[in-house]
Image 1 (cartoon, rainbow, N blue to C red):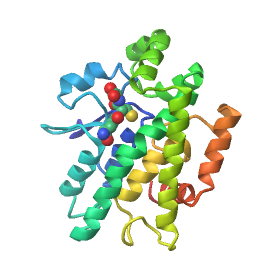
Image 2: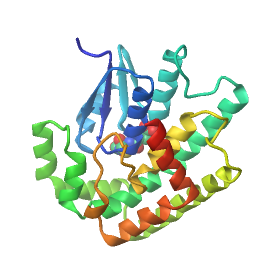
Image 3: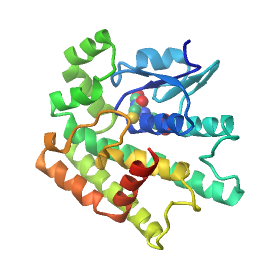
Image 4: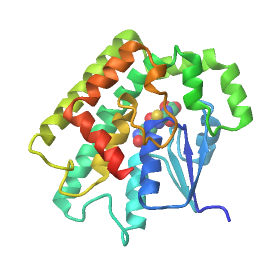
Length: 250
Ligand SMILES: N[C@@H](CCC(=O)N[C@@H](CS)C(=O)NCC(=O)O)C(=O)O
């Protein structure tokens, strides 16, 4: 029987990882439909979920944003476990952090990683192709130089913008370091919440956790300056925290 939930994704996308993690957290049975970047528009736009993925189809509902997906799943499964605290004050804190990570971390870690990954055609394809259908794979492979050009334009990827994004990433990590400096185990309250899940998944492209829900390039495949950056960020309190969250909760 077809599962009630279908998640449309770009496999390695960290926003898609956020939604996938949410589905896994609630033990939901779902089918993931993976597409290459930009080719995905042919599915995302007609679905009514918008231009970006993840898009979750749940029966007749179509939800096109990773945080909206987490909230929806949380409401649907409220009798089992929660990603958002019941307490209003704690919930507001979780929402605020999640929003900050969505807008001020996700776009920057993505830009940094694509800046380094897009010149490495075979490494990029190894991350993007697993689980993608044959025709879409062929279209993306054949048109790779064009798609790469579009992606660089669409995400404003250049040496200067990538450097600036790495700086923003370091600043968000620093703010998380400070939050963790009192020895707390989780970002808000004393249980795992959507704030922890959002930080860990949106930081994942620059930390490369082993438990990531889709194949990511191995450290050995990456240029030395990327390995150095990943190692630097892994050694911060925020980086170590995200890796621990992955180990214990993914
Ligand atoms: N706010 C959205 C952002 C999702 C997003 O930016 N997804 C990217 C992949 S990482 C995408 O689909 N980009 C395609 C585009 O911008 O057209 C969310 O949280 O779901």
